[in-house]
Image (cartoon, rainbow, N blue to C red):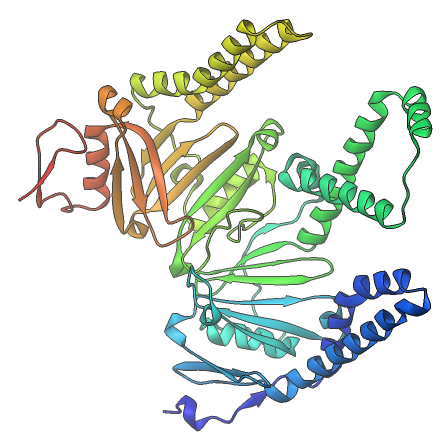
Length: 493
């Protein structure tokens, strides 16, 4: 058997000698522009020379990466050596590989190259969390991805096409302005415009501002913000999800391809998919949309920004249910469309009081304070909105246990329906606050190695929580004696 030590070291594609300097110089363009604009005097010309020296150093560094980077892939390990002044030797056992994803920005695509990122699934990141081969030929990148994930590579014109689970529909762009990206685009665009105006000392005088404010109606600014949000969010959607396809690999895994300027290929092993999640932010839900996500070991949820387990953009709810069921390979009635069990009345009362309580406190403060213009409208709107959100939380609350998975749903601002495979549950955590103890309720956390790490069944009866634990992981509670007084009443035998 051939071991890694018997294999020769390989270099990256020679075309990266051109691509890397181009990409690195493109990142320096804003800096060089600022230096050129602010360095017009004789005393400031050293900035321009410094900028040129910096660009030359970046180009030399980009070229040196080809001479200092080598890799080899054996039957048991993958090794990568990098560094000029400080050498790094990364070695990963192939059993530790969780993902092998491809990306290609416009410069890479122009020269037929791609970047291969080999992930080990370590949550803490660090140098050993990912190996990056930047860059190899596109065909070689596809071969390496399939090799590292042990996929069969279909060849020839008669090779069967991969089963397709989802494909982009351009009508889905209507959900883009309803997502967080719309607000992010508005903030980024207007912040950039303000900074640009400040850089060029564009500051309208008070008289100009007064005259403009007098002529321009207030709604004109609102329309400008709305148009910026809609157009900007649509542009972000098109760039990110152009050519979106979700297919089933031969080994039961998933392959997601998307991107206009930067092409991305994400591979998920079927045996590492622990479940799915259906996210419905409030505005998207009002538009009858949702977004499917895969709960996979080796992929973690980002605290901000895009969830790395997303297997599709925001899409019609019916389509999202179908995609979620397709990811699990089960029927929709066994996934996110399963009939949920309602929680006890005490849980519903708790949702109502927690939703209305803060609003009632704020309304009381507004009524006690001296009256201000508009408070006679603000208080009813505040209480009405809080009541609607509380009712929505009650309607969203539910759980179920299917033959293959645990299903839980909750949330108002973002309604989340989680389907966690029974085999993906590696532990349980029961939490009970003082008010929950008085109401006989408990929050049950199903611990898993995928996604956020644990998913909760909120405000369930104590007996029901223990029943779920026993049904999903039979015998786990056998070493304990339960006296029926609550989740804190377990006694080790």
